[in-house]
Image (tube, rainbow, N blue to C red; front, side):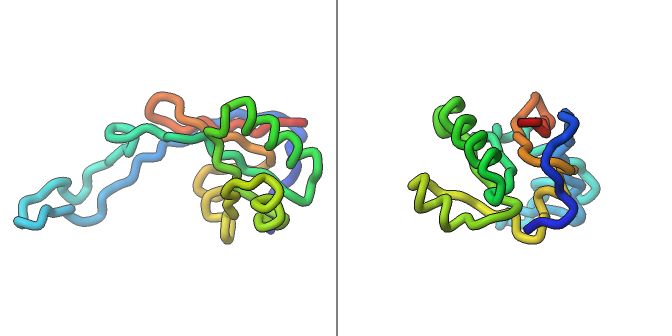
Length: 133
């Protein structure tokens, strides 16, 4: 399980800028510079987030039930991402892919402190909503 997370007690909404600073020139096969080093790039300038990301702990039956309701509510346009519990068990039960936040890399990048947490696109930012059950 991802360390340092708790079940949501106080609901919270935060925004995260997904922009990244390009460390070195990105060049085309012909050698021309596509993006120069030092440029800040926001992926939402080029693509949209196709699914919401739902972080939850599968060891908590209430969170699993809540996740199932959200997946239905958003007509399957949700990527379930576990921070604890067995993704294999849920994949078998739900007959759909279930992901796992290995080492808590995504939770850390998104600043998630409580689960369940739903991440969606809000303009050029990510909206992180930690939801109480």
